[in-house]
Image (cartoon, rainbow, N blue to C red):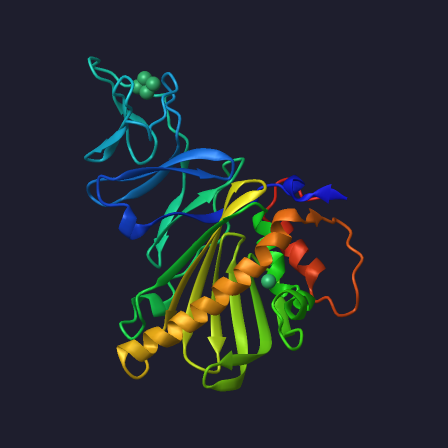
Length: 315
Ligand code: FES
Ligand SMILES: [Fe+2]
């Protein structure tokens, strides 16, 4: 049996900033996938993500560095680099250093999030993350956000959602949810779960529909009561430390205040579940060959899917 820290950090699209927090000309330091990264935006609006260390003599670009037009400027000797990572200016020199290059990570902006593709070998993205229609729909409330830093791997967070038998024990559900469909045959996994949605207005037969876009971002829709969208981002910091972040919205029904009340109830429920899981996550071991029962759900199918995003599989 091995501790959770032996599950390798996966590759994938990971949230490195909220779009609104990265203004034109802005820059931020982040720790993602055991790397020190800097995410920055040109004055024209292009977001980039680079390793923090300057290839000249190693200064950290996020500590005193700045953005000037379409370049990021190192705080040590003022070398400038473009969004492609190439050196484009050296102060007091007529020349550039054609071999000096910041290591860049591909960036997309979707649904108000800046996502970076972080791969330990620098391999290119194997899939895309779509715009979710709800995020541009004025009928939906602004996101309610909750964020947690948890001492576990992102793989454990993902496994929790399909580990049906922990729901009655940890979350005091009446019954384990019924997983009607699990499709982990591609980079985008799909899970459909039948549940009894408990609401202040009664219990409704419902479904939870999840699309998981690699290990770093998923879209969950609770179907049967009001229209909802939960974007969960799971960003590895270290092997055994990650940030879990919920972005939750509901379609406006009735008055603004009523819609907000419903949204807060959902968020309260999601928040409570996350907090209930934390003590288990932060102390459990990773069992590579678990002793399973016939009612555990698609744990091994999930692990095979998670292994798609590992250079060296867990074990
Ligand atoms: S270390 Fe960055 S310019 Fe010298
Ligand atoms: Fe849970």
